[in-house]
Image 1 (spheres, chains in turn yellow, green):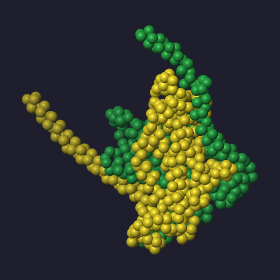
Image 2: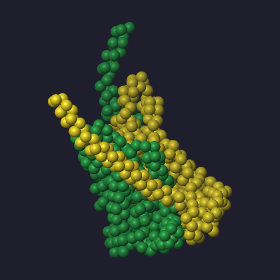
Image 3: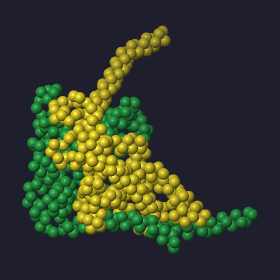
Image 4: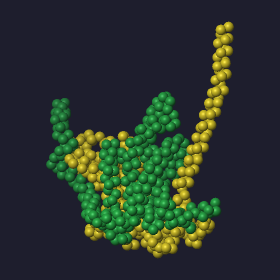
Amino acid sequence: MTVVAEDAGRAAVAMAVAPASAERARRARRVRWWKEVGALGIAVLVLIWTLVPVYNIFMVSLESKGDVFTETIFPARPSLDSFWIVITQGYWYLEEFWHQFANSVYIGVGTVVITLAIGSLASFAIGRMRIRYGWLLSNAALLTYVIPASFLAIPFYRIMQIYGLTNNLWSVIAAEVTFATPYAIFIFHQYGTSIPIELDEAARIDGASPFQVYWKIYLPLMAPALVAVGTYALLLAWNEYLYQFLLLTSKHSMSVPVALAQFLNSDEAPWNYMMATAIVYAIPPVAIYYVFRRRMSAGLTMGGVKG
Amino acid sequence: MSTQTLEGGELLARRRPPMERFWRGGLQGSEYTWAIAFTVPYIVLFLAFVAYPVAFGAWLGHEPHLYEELAEDPIFQKTIVNTILYVGIGVNLKMFGALLLSGFFMRRGWWVKGLLLVYVLPWALPALPAFISIHWMLNGEWGLINNFLWNLFGINGPGWLDTSRWLSLGAVITSHIWKWMPFWTVILLAGRMAIPQELYEAAEVDGATGLTRFTHVTFPLLANLYLVCTLLSTIFTLGDFNSVFFVSGGGPALSTHVLATLGIRNAFEVARPELGVAAVLTALPLMIPLVLILMRKLRTTEVTL
């Protein structure tokens, strides 16, 4: 009797609970569905927001000359002529395009090599050899890192005149190295703390000179940080505009961004050529960025959130 | 044999303190020379290309009459307002957007990862092509935006960059956000990923869901990073030359300059470098506290960017 009553009670409870839980499950499903829809909506907005300017570059570069000044939102007669003009240097702003491209490469490679050399030597002395007053150097680097480059441009230009380096690619390399090295010193210092100092001590006991320790132990172990900083320095030097614009004025010494901005000087700018030039200029850094993205963001956030 | 090794070990043990001293400071003899030699390139670089220009700039802009001249210049007055708006609105919108979007990109799923790859494109692109494209896109007559408005809705869009100061400044701020929000999103995303999952699980057991999860777990742990990023971004934005120079070019009628572009204009177009330096130096009251706080924060929390 009691057993039956208990069963009946349990059944009644189950009866009462079942619709409620089904209702809850339905509501949870609905909430999840709305969340998915919301996420998709955000995704679409993000896509449009990100891609409109990019679409604009491609659209204009694919237009033929007469179509640039029309009210269309896609090229009426798409053609690759503009790219052909850029590649064959067929417009007077582009006369020395490949030479200027080589200038940009030269600046980039020079910046990477010198930044890595100066940065790794300094961080070795500060972080591994624990040189006295090393903190002064790392503070100097920190200070340089937080001074906006554009604020230093005017005196920097005057000083390059004093040094007699205007219109010289090395003046630009000096500028880019100045602003890339502080970052290099941080990353190297940070990354260096993960390499046991006992390695250095063991090598010293075996009779290695400090330079041998640096060359044979420190540098090979620092390879990931070197890649991250090298990529950073290369992109910085390739993308930077202000210093290259101020320091390189002759057509022969110009780098690509300076040549590109020249189009803005003329009133009847051939916008399609300009956008094609912009795309050719942007392809290398974007490709490098996507290839080295993981290593770069590893560098960017190395020990990033210890706070 | 065994005694020899013992001796060797003893020797090593006895030599240990001097070695320690050698590596931890108090370098001796040739080691000291090496250490100096290693730091000389950086010291030279710093003195020649940072210290000297800074000192030179301070000397160029030391005369008080320059600041009187600037203060009376209506363009400079507008520039100050623009700079405050540009930095104040630009940085906060950008960082808040980055904070929200970094949460969005924590979602699982292949398409979210794919979207992230597309979303970081503005950061990967060099500034110049991107801003030139935006400049042309906002052209009142032939730009993509107005063509779009005309073709789809039959609306005649305004001249975004050449009619109104506020439209133009808004366009500049928007472009800056477009270019730099992806970078900060990636940084904050890394910060979010570093938060251990167990904390969320524990919070869930205690009944925290949705917004409370954010206010009680995510934000307290992210707050320091968010603050450092905001301060850094403030300085970078203050020095951002490209957005203004290429999107609005300071126009219409020199009404959208910020300090960074006005300095360059005074120095190279007006050919008065000392006036340009003076314009830039007026940012110092904001810069100095920022730099001090940041140097402290960056050193102690080891945030590397």
